[in-house]
Length: 155
Image 1 (cartoon, rainbow, N blue to C red):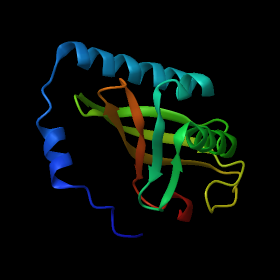
Image 2 (cartoon, rainbow, N blue to C red; image 1 turned 180 degrees about the horizontal axis):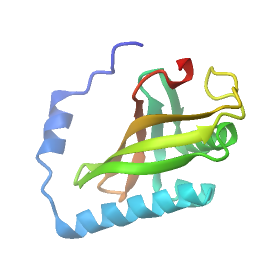
Image 3 (spheres, helix red, strand yellow; image 1 turned 45 degrees about the vertical axis):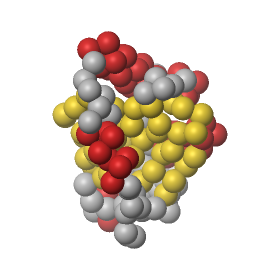
């Protein structure tokens, strides 16, 4: 695991200073719901429609990264192929002018290779925290930053 990328102080301060606007909150919440429903329905086009064209999907703990709509489609195709029965049970959520942060319990059967891990055929479970950064101008998510609770595949 490497050192996290440095985020400029001014960028973080801008995020902290964003005012909470009820209409924007509603837009963020509705977009997150659309994204989640599309994911549950395995609707790749619906998922991609919630993302900026330059979105970034990343797993900071492993260093894996996918960029743009093509990258996001690749991320989801790989994930849903590796775990065809994947299921997310939401355990916590925060929505604000910066975007969404969700915590979920994930379960699925590891049927195909995922990242650097060969399939086990076993049903496994793990916890995730996912950040969905909100792009205020485009009114879409800038991708996902996904943290897992441990090296789930070493269990």
